[in-house]
Length: 190
Image (cartoon, rainbow, N blue to C red; front, side, top):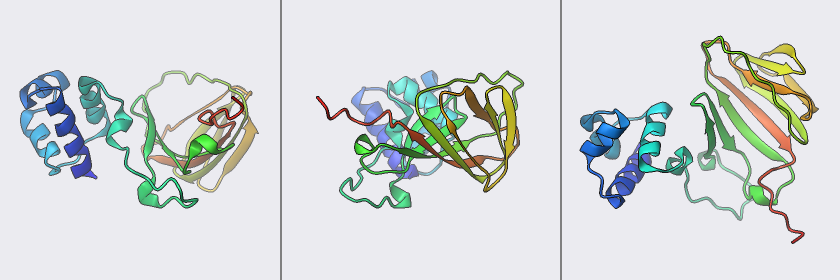
């Protein structure tokens, strides 16, 4: 995976006629580190990769996309790709092939530790939400009530209720989340 990311960075950088020095200055990362990264000799933290993506004018998910066998109903673990990264703290992976054709949207969500004392803002949206905690301790807010969920705990609620989650521990939280409706679904009625 490091080689794939490094190769994509190098190809994109060169296509923009950008030197390693310029990328280094704009991203705040050393030339030596970037050189090793492009050759697949080192790994990169999400926040550093996000800086590189910003400089190269691409979404962070660009570095994780790969060719998938979309004809299959099976998704192998190596086919799971990052679909979204929020504030360098929450990483989403789609768990379904051809998500544009499905009613439900299953995701694997990793919530990184959060040390801030900022108030958690609840939000609502259309549909239903199911959460199953696989690892870690998740703090969930639903309609201004706080719940602490441990591994194998789950919750199923109407998404029109105000809700949000956060990880107040020093360990990652991994959870399965299934939403309806699937906002990526194509409207086939047109």
